[in-house]
Image 1 (cartoon, rainbow, N blue to C red):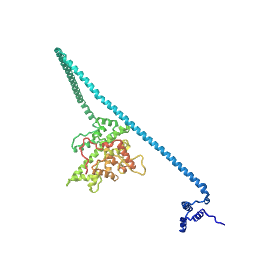
Image 2: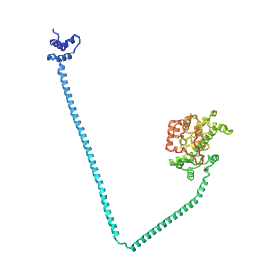
Image 3: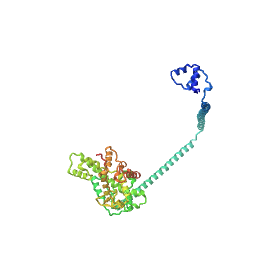
Image 4: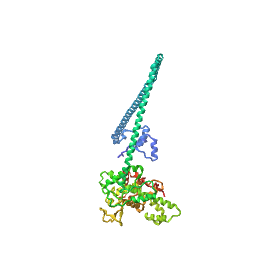
Length: 497
């Protein structure tokens, strides 16, 4: 049986018949050529391949028709892309032409408007010249007519006399009216002054009536005298049941207004020993808050000024080379008060400092419910300080595992002093004191909003508590009260020790 030759073998046979040297060299070098490569070399040498050799039915019936279809599709794609490009070019050309024509239209219209405007402006000089010529001719003719006429001397004299008589009469009338008005005003001023003089004794009488409830301190006194009078004004009257109406009338009589305090940065030394029992009955939230601030603000400012006086005295003592026995005794007392061990003066400087008014007011409002809580009304406990040893008020809602009480005080100012001492000495508020000292060292103002962030240990809620404090400070504009001083106090700067 004859072997069936493959398509490649048939191509090699054809190469041998036509003696194609290139294929023969490849065979000698033992290089395998594919049927496609052999077919290309044969066609290159212009050798016709018989149709009988193409035995691949699939190639003939499927591959070639598909290739033709793909070519046609490619041609169609090229034609469509060309037509699309033509259309896009036409659109861009149209846009460019329309934009050019639009710009030309604008430029031409602008030029035409300019020409019209110039023409209109050119009318003004011509019109002005015409008006000028007309007026000049008219006035010239008028003066010529006056000059040509003969003046009657008698009539001219009468006209001059009448003119001066009219002017004199007008002058007399005007001066009379002004004189009458001045007299009327002077009489009114005298009446007002008399009324003021009459009213003054009434104001004094009112103040004398209200003095048992308040002892205001006189201004411009020596520092030692001020301290004595402060002790007098701190009336410890725990059984004195003041009503809110009485307190509001008192504020009105002494003209105690928070807007004035914000503007003048001064507060009157009004020291209440306790809150009114019916403070919660005020319907207006704004009025309730303002009443609370008016009661607590002087107490906080007074205690801060005492601390500033102590800082001033400490600076004087530490700057001396030799100290007296009294000064040494004072230092020992302050070391005990601020819980400073081993007589460390630097530690005392850090602890002996003011509490920002905005923080103190915000914490007082939060802990006492704006002066309406049971602890504030029964025990003057503004800041809700705990105690395990001293006398206190038992909280109603308290865990059985906790044995603390809320510390009570004889008067409100004692609560403020204990609160300030707590922040200045307790280990839980070291960050507060460090940040305050850092602000001092940089000669910056002690900012309540900044320092409030360090008081997370004051309550169990932590960071939530500090956010509430900041909210109270901002909403009630408590930062306005930070530079406030007592109206009768000696002006002292906050010292950097």
